[in-house]
Image (tube, rainbow, N blue to C red; front, side):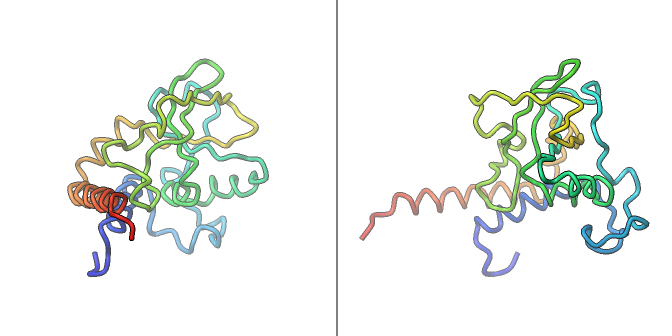
Length: 191
């Protein structure tokens, strides 16, 4: 933290750092992902694996659901040469929560609370939960022509890791301070 970092900035930064630290990454892979040559791609354990059958998923899984419309070549590149951490950072808004699974499809909550870098993108107490619980999940067939899907892991495995992260108490405190400042700002009399 630097001296000029505000509570909202600190909360946003810490939330994103904690979230990304939980995702597999190989720091030995050279170059930025967009400039990475095929021979320098990360090992399989650091890359996304496409979901081709709904049996590969279970309720409460976090998935990266990349829309293919106009992005199919980019998505193939993400699957081939990005680490999981890099892929999520590149397409962070594509992280979804699986609500239910059947033989041919999954129902997914497309808008969930995960850190995106701003303090308001994720209340630490709501990590991984749908933004609006009363919005029904979206139907997503598996396999899908319209999306490239990869499993990140189960929310129930991520939550303990988030809570046990050494920076979690600081994130909580920074988030609470950011909320307090925002509430004070909203209730300040206008001149």
